[in-house]
Image (cartoon, rainbow, N blue to C red):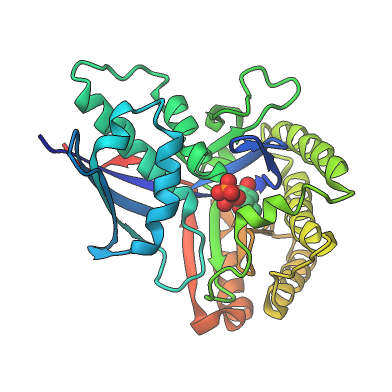
Length: 346
Ligand code: DP6
């Protein structure tokens, strides 16, 4: 018997950054993200349970990728208590990302959330009659978290919050929770235009980056600050008239993330000269025009420009005339807040 499942799952961009973890993929501080739409992974997995020689094959667009197998294999070890069949099956995973090839965009959030969705779906098929309840996304978020922390936030429309935050009753470290209903309409159609400054592979993996927090003297202060920024931002985003406060928290979080990399015992720099040039252009443009566009950064040199839909004409013009020149091969991804994963089969 062979089972198949296909899902499309989006990437997400953190406004409050998850940076520092402990135990089995548990965050040191809560984080909050926008779910994206254009940047996503399409994945199909096939499972043949109870085979004599269990096997994992990982393909990218149909082409075998042996180097991914060890990571997937240790992830599956973590999932044995959830999915009993996982250690005795022949599993083939085939995916493709929509990010332009060589865009230097991390794919772990979209890929691991797509994989978690497919595995959950296969589990339901194997256990015929296993009904999905309305909390299935929370469970899948937990499964995704075990693969990559940020992937836990890709399961929900518009926005998600992951990690225990004081005063937010449902928040917890195991899985992310939906946050769409808690933000004003202005954020429901926000744009995230990703300016690709460098397309080279990340020099330091996220896991190595998280580990550098372990002996950082400022770590505790950062975790407190992140939680306080998150509580502040959740208040700000309920009100559509507080976009200036939104900007200030988002940019501070982005710069703090990179400051943490600079402060470690083995410091490293991911931003490039063109990242700084873009940041300065954004600050100048905002000063000149009062247009509420701001930036955030991932663990890399590329710049995410965030802005409300009603300012798109001005911002697109600004990007074309003043920012495009800083992008490698003028590469830009015109992304937007999105509705979360979509099932591709059935
Ligand atoms: C800077 O989720 O990639 O993007 O849990 O080790 O897979 P792992 O790390 P990952 O870290 C993401 C870090 C970040 C901030 C964020 O997305 O919150």
